[in-house]
Image (cartoon, rainbow, N blue to C red; front, side, top):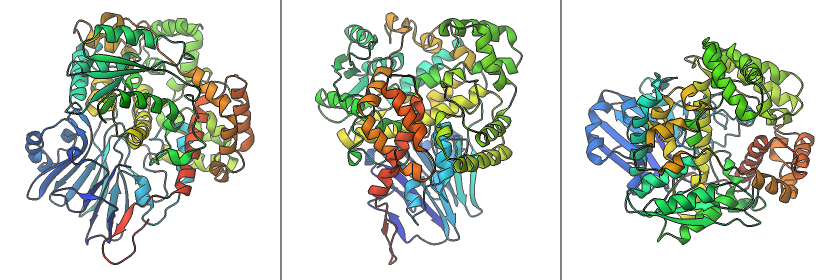
Length: 612
């Protein structure tokens, strides 16, 4: 696994990352698993700057940024294209800055001697064998929003730097400070469209060098990236084309490849084993990740795609995916709650009519679902959630039929023991009481949480691509500058029901990058058929994973009967809580991997035995 770490203390540390390489110019900062080309550093006396990952700044731009480091203008160091970690030293102050989407997270722990920081919480836990934090894992399963218990990692005594914040370590101790506003100043869609186009083009260009290039070619988001990449050279474009999907991804992909020079199209046929939950009886065959990863559920599908890429490129290269395109280019209907809160009743009614037509329901039903969330702020919503956790569990109904909420309580919360639900309720109450600088709009909060969740999961997909094929996964929609450009457009403009992804249409119409028929597309592929096929075909493995021997069950995070009922419904082809099942299966796999094969994270430096 790729990770970075550093030590800041009055004396040197007795350990260092196993196999780690020191970052030039930064004392006691190391990287593990990163290729040398993705670790760059510049310095001038007491001022130093390093970027780790895919950073579009060249060496001259990095050197020109040293005065910015000296002046501690931290946010400016996050404005280059790409996705990367920043480590900057100004005198005795060290700043560690992750990205907005959590692909480069930052964790830390302190003691009397100093502070360790790392991009891997598991590594910091291994310093003294810190166990999993059951309450934090419960929050992960119950909410799917990383910033609810913002500063708690999944390990006890390991702190997390929340999204949009940075870690400062210096003579005065440790501080966590925001570098990103809770919400962006709104910019109209038409005005912002060229900014979005430029940000995406720069994000793609930042990844293209002498490596072979491949890309998903399926929905609007991945097609946009594939076409941008094709402007710079040949692209091996792949479409997962299992006949059970019954969507039009393949037809659009073939037509796009026939129209856009530089795209060589390669369909990926499905097979009996390319379904959800395949391969979970072989946990050593899955890469260990720092947190539960949703892509363990779809690993067989992703491997089929990567096999096709490997078979049609001269060697390991960079593969573009449209992950997070939905999160930044459109918006869920939860923004209706914001319109109601702001008393924009005419616009709320107009949009409710459109959403009602799409869902074959009434506009009154749409607005009534949004109204409760419009009457409460984030802290109040958390207090309501805590109260709900203390009540008896609910009967299951699809999430889309429940009222909109700032932090929706997922079905997985109803599978926990009362004791764990009580601990989680107490933690949510505490978080609500400590909340500061919260966004006023539900859409601003949920957009950031969606991105953080997708970013964490994409890191797991990246680990799968690297471990099995040596392929570097690129997800430009998760880049800082792309996020900023897109989310500056208000949610009610990005998610307007009359047009599918109007921001993308405004950004690329008339540019020649995307064919007109792509921009006119209003359909989206889905994997429901493969999800239910996987639930049916792999039911015995899932029952074993989540049955009496379950690690989650031992912690009180699932109880056997509700999960068995959900699996039985799924095996019979009936609607079930698919998202909750994804979360608990991924968490169970992760816990079993941690227990079965602990990684060796550290090595001894001076005499004492290092943590394993």
